[in-house]
Length: 288
Image (cartoon, rainbow, N blue to C red):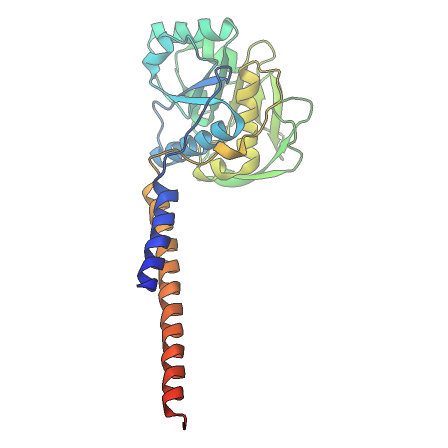
């Protein structure tokens, strides 16, 4: 009976931690970021990027809103539009005009990787981006060192060289913007507009980049800057866990931990029971 109770206790605690939804209480003044992923060519990377960005949002006090291109027609309540690896003609003319009006009115725009090729005929975006990609990214993905330039709130605290494996884009002409990061070859890989709250990063097209602490710091600080926030970012460590529903892999991990604990308790009880039985038999054999 004692063993059975221990097993139920372990399973119950593990199940509660895995299945209880996280209560996120967002303040009304937290920046709201509309994330668009239309036209991407790598669903696995985009899904992982959204998961990591969601954790960053909860930890660093901004709100992530996943949306569709049509959502840009009403950006009331949105502080930043994020083009997360978008590509191709994802907006119609009305939507392109809405994004332009939003940004020129003081709204923020954060773009990653293939977003440089969003709207091939969208002249305003390519002028605002300030650079023209020479073509598709270089295949296959290769590891290169990224150096950050100091002096911007977007790169604050990023002092170490970062190794990223990416399918790199190259640009001709290169941006005449505020360059924030370069490869060791001198090619720019992150920059922002000096007039508008627009940021772009070449990196972000590969799954591994979104697992890099420094790259996530670059993106969250770019979001904060694009939102026009003058406040320092403060970490909320109590609300960084992923919300319900948890991924299947996470639930399987918790189940494995619970199962391992249950087996350990079962083995411990078997050992204890055998020791008690052996001691009892020894007492029975002992002379009176």
